[in-house]
Image (cartoon, rainbow over all chains, first blue to last red; front, side):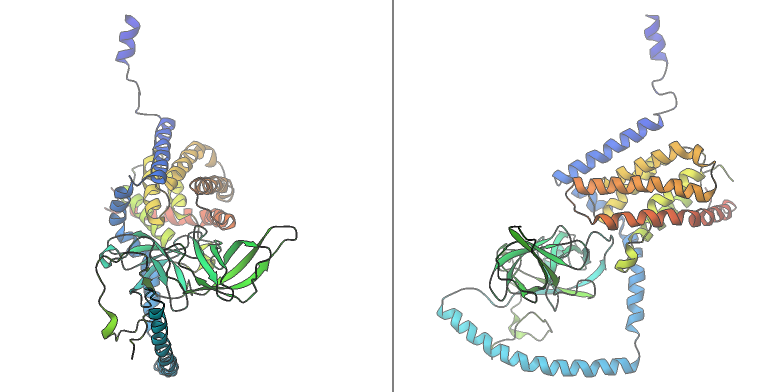
Length: 305
Length: 164
C-alpha cells in the first residue's frame, strides 16, 4: 500500500496543468464550439450576449467611416447649387415618366382584374441606413440600422435604386446583417428579361461579378442581356433588376455554358438601402396604406389618378 | 524591463487590435490589412517572461469570431494554436535580429492563415483563396515596425501608475 499512499500524496499536476495540456483543452473547446455552432443554434445566446458587450468596439470601428461621411457632408455652396440643379432636372424627368407609369399601372391593374389575378403591384418597403460594410475582404456583408423591432425578418430582400443588393441573414434587435449578391455563399433565382429563361446567379466572391453556371450550351443568352429577379425561390420579389450579362464562356465540348454578369445595384457605394417585403412572406401586421403617400420611396408606385 | 505584467496595457492593446482589424477600409486596402490581433498577441508572448497568453488568445479569438461573424471558435482555435507555437519557439526566436525574426514569424502567420482557410472550407464558407494569403505578407512586414513602437510605449507606461 506504500505506492498508493505515495501517489495520492503527490499532487496530480505539480504546477497546474502544463502548457501543452492547457493548449489542448482550449483547442478542443474551440473545436467543440465550431461543431456546435455549425450544426445547431445552441450558441446563439452566447453570440448575442457577446455582440451586445462588444458594441463599443463596433462603434469605435465605425468611427473613421462616420467621420469621413461627416467631412463629405461639408460641401461647398457651388457644388450644392450644382447638385440642386441636376436634381431638379432629374425630378422633372422622373415626374414625366411617373405620369406615364401611373397610366400604365392603372391599365395593368385593369388587365389583371380581367384575368382575376391577385398579384399586387405595390410592395411594403422600408429605408435602412448602411452602418458598416466589408469588415473582411472575403465576406461581403453589410450591417443595416433596422432590426427585429422594425419587422425585419431573416431572408428579407434588400434593393437599392438600381437593383437587388442581397438579403438579410441575421436579425438583431436594432440592427441586421445582410449578405450581398457577390458573396460566394449567395445565390439568387433570376430570369433573363429578353427571353424569360429561368436560372440562378451565384456570387463569385471577388466583390464585382456574378456567375451564371449551368446554362444549357444552346441557351439564347447574349452579352448585354438584362437579368431580373424571379419569384421562384419565394424569397425575392419578382421584377427587380439584378444585373447585366458581361461575358459568355463556353468551352468547346462542355455541356454547360457559364455567363458572367455585372450586378445592377451599386453594392459598395450607397449609404442607404431598401428592405422589401416579399409577396409570399405573410405580413403579420398590415402596413400603413400608402394611399396618402408623399414620402420619396423609389420602389412604391404612385397612387392611381 | 519590468517583469510585472501590465495587464491593463495588454487588454488595451488587444482592444485596439480588434478595432484595427474591424474598421472599414476600401476594398483594395482591406486586402492588405495585417492580422492585427495575432500580431499583438505574439508580441506579448515574446515580450513578457511568464508563459501566459493561451487563455487570453482563446478569449480574443472568440471576440474576433463574434465581430467578424465567422463560426464561433474559428479564430479562437487559430489564435490558441498560434500562441502555443510562439511560446514553444520563443527562446529560439530571441536569438535572431528583428528582421530574421520577422521572416521566421511569417511562417507562423502562414500556419494561422492556413488554419482559417481550412476551417472556412470545412464549414462550407467558400472564400477567395488569394485574398486570404496577402495579409500574411503584410503582417510579416509589420512586425519590425510594431515591436519598437510597442517596446517604447511599454517603457513609458512602466513609470505610470496605470501599470498594475
